[in-house]
Length: 226
Image 1 (tube, rainbow, N blue to C red):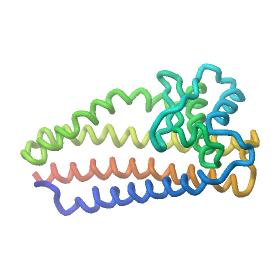
Image 2 (image 1 turned 90 degrees about the vertical axis):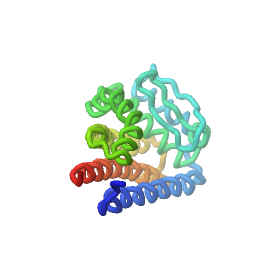
Image 3 (image 1 turned 60 degrees about the horizontal axis):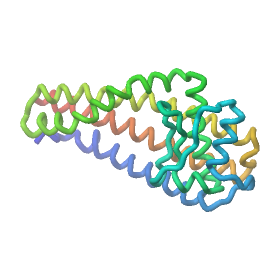
Image 4 (image 1 turned 90 degrees about the horizontal axis):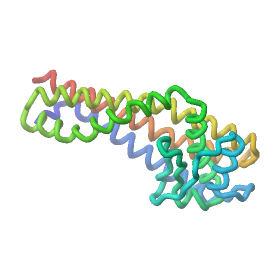
């Protein structure tokens, strides 16, 4: 059915890496989510303090459902924090809140990679929506034309994930610096905890890029065998 000898390398290895990255970030959050920060402020309070210090007054900090569903919504200028981050004064919560606030700062400063990523979101969404039908038709019905379309879709997704890397890395870099400069976290255990949480989260973005690249290479190998 077109899986070929390269399936394990292109699909299996990235899948294992992705699972490992998710285990790392979940474990880091559970560990440091139980360590209360000495500043005794919640994730929501942390985000608002950072926004105020950055003179950003048009971004709302809101609570959302879902474990680790934290994100910044540039279209509506909302900083969405999950319950475990929004109202918890833990080291993990402060790290994640500061990271998401880093995206709001990127937006305010017109950070170029963030602008590029936002610009290609619509075409990325289209590629994601049609991809399952393209792959099904191309692989199971051996339609080479659909496989080629699938390659272009995965190329778009791979580029998107590649651009995402500097956006996420920069947000974490900003978070680590700001938390210490504003003395929201203290040197020592709290700094180590924030670094562990954010570094583990960074692995998930690396894994997503490798997975997208692996799917692209696998589909190209399938087309070449036809």
